[in-house]
Image (tube, rainbow, N blue to C red; front, side, top):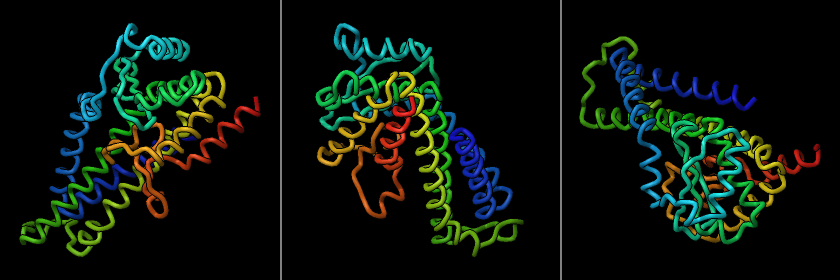
Length: 282
């Protein structure tokens, strides 16, 4: 069900990009939007993992440097039928973790020093299993493409805004170029794109929780870890980039109220409830 929902949302994002490109520039705008999306997806596909690891100063560690962590990752990767991913550690107090890599053969699991301090071995296994599930499900690629298309929509809206400010509409007579509709989409388009992107991210989190629970062997391990991580993330600040917050197992950015609408993660209470229900059905 999550897979079908994600596919539908991805199609929605793509159609939004083409539609907004057409409103802002007719056929030329549609072509430009598609070319820009292709170019951005190409770059993010090949280089997004390197960029995010460098952004958080994640250091690759060997088995000799982190034997327990390395052993957990290797055992769970074998259970999941995955190649051994790279193992990285971030020197961050906030307990958190993420996975990256364009496919299972280029996967990376990164954890913070904070997460290794507060979780038990079983809870850490639940977290690692969740991240391996993202790699197994190729969620990183899906999330990257979604973020890129959403970013392209926002970029088109910004370009149109500057063009209108400086009187740069040279194709008003082109079919599909409607100034009033374009003005509306300049405002609504980026917000709608962001909401769709968030929905994709939330669907992938639920999927990774389910598959991760199977890999770890006990859903309660991940449920217990999520409780600790959620409470700690509210107290311990992390200088995280909002563009990469969807990668982490819990949202590294604290916020409530209306900000929850724009959260990249589903409610932590719902995730825990699903995992506990799954455990009791066994």
